[in-house]
Amino acid sequence: MNLQRSTVLITGGTSGIGLELVRQLTKIGATVIATGRDLIKLTETQKEFPKIHIFQSDVSDAESIRKLYYKVSQQFPDLNILINNAGEMRLLDLQDTTPSLENITREIDINLSGLIQMTHQFLPLLAKQPSAAIVNVSSGIAFMPFSVAPVYSASKAGVRAYTQALRLQLKDTSVKVFEMIPPGVKTNLQKDWVLPTDSNSSLTMEADKMVKIAIKGMQQNKPELYPTLIGVIRWASRIVPGALINFGHKEFERFKQLNIKANNQTK
Image (cartoon, rainbow, N blue to C red; front, side, top):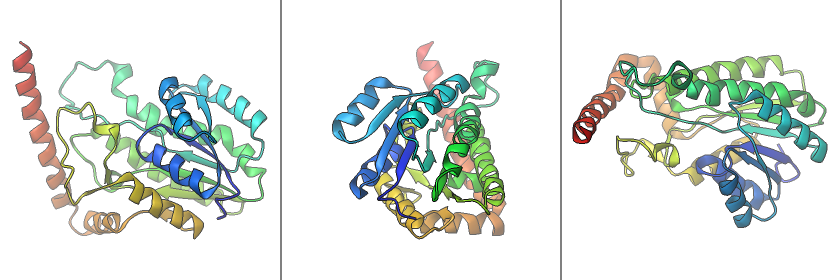
């Protein structure tokens, strides 16, 4: 796929993988549109990359998506790539009844429902282009439930299933469907966690390396964009699924103990 001549909309384009996509696609020469909820961060991103275009938008809000589509379709009728990157990941104890019913599904609203709604809204415009693509960002966690992030796990498993179905339905159209599958990537998803992340872990990688792999894969029309580590996780999820899940569950035990400690200190 020719990215240099593409017009690309990236949700969640102000940090982490989204910001790195902005950086690398701008360098290639693509026309880049970045969206996000925080106007200050969007403005800062545009200052760093003056050639990009920014729109404040919230993928968890259907009306916000409608307004975004109206503005983008009017100003960029040649939009041909949608990257559904916006996401949130929380560490949750499901026995904690503090979150409200509306709050507990937040990751579903952003990571899954928002992605589906963005795709539904923008697909007619993409389908008009001679060459187009939808890139959905899932996660290695789509292959294994991560008990410390249960709702996030559900959302990313849903993203993978939806993306595979979408690819089948669009196989005879001009719209390619890619799935970007990162492992643990060092981003601001973890900034509010009580559980510290290991920056030296072999199970994580830098955002720039992940995006470089994704861009190369898109240029080569590979439907799934992932590093070697994800291949290992996929293999393990089939061969020793129980061991993989139990390995990840150790993080929940750590999280629970840290939560108890933090709660005791605030009493």
